[in-house]
Image 1 (cartoon, rainbow, N blue to C red):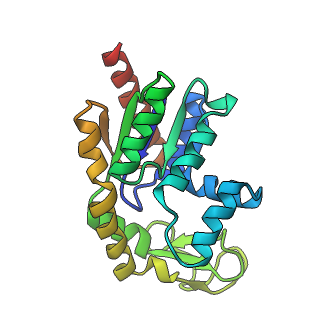
Image 2: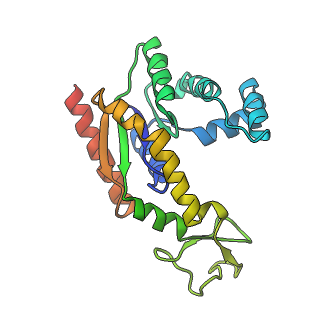
Length: 221
């Protein structure tokens, strides 16, 4: 299957993308991974992207699209892929359609992870990270440390990242509503959008997504 995964920050896209790609037997292609891979390999696209990033500018759509095109042309993506973080706006969605049409293929579904805005704020603003090891992550509500402000694993200080503050989260949501959410309507016009709730246990959300995708595939055949 060829799937685009969309949803607001805090919807759990990263977690579900990895799980769904594994279950479906297709590569998980994320924008972040594309940038890191191209920059670390010092490809021409990576050098170009880094020049924009070093200058504090957004990487232009055409560079992101070129990276995605290169990745989707790799042998492991011949039978399908799961796109996470791309397309990020309608112009990128239109460019993706052109790319796929040029290859004689099309998307099977656009999976929209739906979560209430206040839940997004609660999820992200409640995160606390260990200063000694950023892989030690806690949450004031869902996975609170035994002692407030202290990492259970190493005893390090727990802190809230600047980009996890409530004000920053709300600004990120504004950007999502303005730039990315319109692609849902774009794909709805093509009959591709499958919306599921992203509330509940991780395993339950994965099961819900797989069942919805299975129904979508059966309905399109």
